[in-house]
Amino acid sequence: MRWKMQRIVENAVKKGKICKDVSELSLRHRFATHLLENGIPIGKMM
Image (cartoon, rainbow, N blue to C red):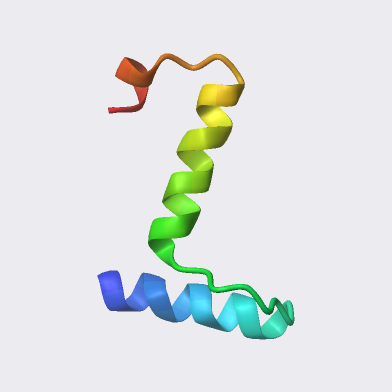
């Protein structure tokens, strides 16, 4: 399952012509940061 998610991310990066390094981990981190910035308590994310 994990490799499939990585493949989806890689394909999206290629289609979007994104030059940055993007991984499922960086997406998860950005999503969590977004939640925190919008007032979601860290305990709710776990």
